[in-house]
Every structure is written in structure tokens, then in C-alpha cells.
Length: 109
Image (cartoon, rainbow, N blue to C red; front, side, top):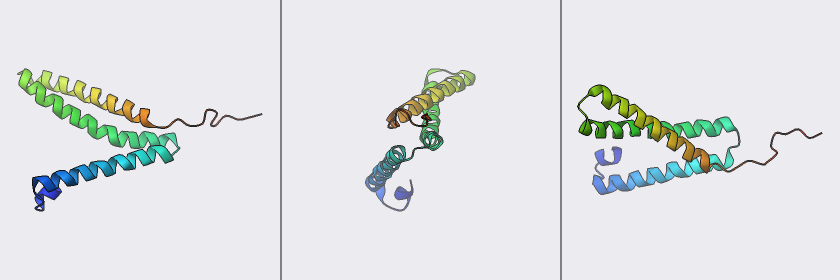
């Protein structure tokens, strides 16, 4: 939106968006590869999964508005969609993390 608002046009905004998405993916991959504490990996995963959950809510809500007139059911289905998308994003991100050493943190006697 910033690129489009500054006069880059739709093609320039698309290119800036692709570059930003690539940079975000690279930073996430780098973090998962080189950061070892589990709490840091979980925090980064949450930073990626939370916006996916919000997007899942809005996408499901848009479809629910087309399919059902009841506002209560629209919101209920939207929440279920948000949870489903958030869980899928969370699991996929955790699956990308490289495994640690097999005996990490085990005391040897």
C-alpha cells in the first residue's frame, strides 16, 4: 500500500510486495536455522502464525457472508476458520525448524 500510495503504480507495488515477502521469508528461515532457544523459535512462529490466523478469519468471514444470513453463524464459522488457519500455519512453521542434536541437554555421568 505504501508503494502504491507513493506513485509506484500497481506493478511497482506488486514488485515491492514480492520483495518484502521474500525478505520476510529469508529472515524467518535464518532465524529458524541459527537461533537455538526453543522460546525464541516459538516467538518467531507466533509472529508468523498470528497474521495468518487474522487473514483466515477475514477470508472465512467473507465466504460466510455469502453463504449464510445469520451474523452469529458468520462469526462462529469465521472463528473456526481463524483457528484452523492459525494451527496449520503454526504446524508448518514448526516443521521447518531443523532438529537439534539428539542428546542435547542430557547430563552424562
